[in-house]
Length: 348
Image (tube, rainbow, N blue to C red; front, top):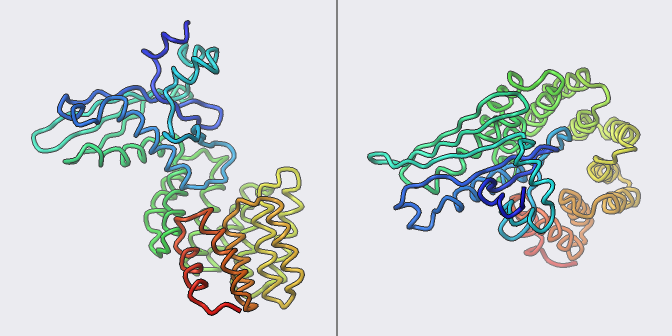
C-alpha cells in the first residue's frame, strides 16, 4: 500500500507497550469546525490527552506502557511520519495490526454537545465506547480520554489520580482508591499485585503505616520477586523512624533489581535519607551521588538532597538542588515550596 494513500486511513497514533492505538478524525458539527475545532484537531487533542494522562501517572508498570512521540505538537499525523520513516509499519497497521482503533463524533444537542468515541480492542475482541456531554466541546476531551485509558489499562488511571493528588499536595485520595477498587475487579489476576502495591502507597501517604505494610506484604505474596513493595516497605520503616530496617529493605531491592536497575535512583535516594537521619552525612552524600549517577533526571533525588543540605545550613547549595527538583517536576507543590523557602532563607 503506498504510504501517501494511508493519509485517508490513519489518524493519530499512541504507542501503548508493543501495541498501537489509532485515533481517526472525529466528525464534528460545522459550527464547531468553523471555530477551529476541526476533525483533525479533535483527534489530535484526544491523542494528546491520552499521552498526558500516562505521563502524569508515572507508572512503573513495565507490562503496559504508553509512549507518544515527544515533539512540540505532542502528536504526529501517522501518514506523514510513516511516509518518511516507516511505511512498512504503517502498512501493517492498516492491515489490522493495531490493537486499538478509535473513531468518533461530536453531536450538537439542544443545549449541550455530546462527544462519543467508539473503538475496537482487537486483543480481547471487544468494543469500547466512551462519551461525555457538556456545553463546551473542548471540555469533553479529557473525560473521554480518561475513560479510554481506563478501558485499555485501568491501573494507569489509578496511578494518574494518585500522582496528581500527591503533586498538588492534596490529602484526598478517594478518587484514586475508587479507581484501585475497579482495578482489583477488572485487572487480570496475574497483574493485581500492581494495584495492591498502589493501595499501600495511598495508605502510606495517609500516614496509615501498619495498613500500608499489610498491603505491601500482600503484594509481595502475590509476586515474590516484585521489587516495588520491598522498596515501599523501606519507606514505611523510615516513616516510623526504623531506619536500620529501612536500609535492610533498600539493600534487598538493589540485589533483586540488579539486572533492570529500574529502582536504583529511588533506592539510593532513600538510603541516603536514612543515613542522614542516623547521623552519617558523609555516607548519605555518597548515596545521593550514586542516585544521580543512576538517573540524573530523577526529581525526588534533588529534593531529598536539598533537604539534606538545608539541614546542614548549606542554603546556597540547597537552593541549587531544589531548583533541579523543580526543573524536573514543576508540577510538584512540595518542590516549589521547598525552593521558595530556601530562596527566602539567609544564605550561609
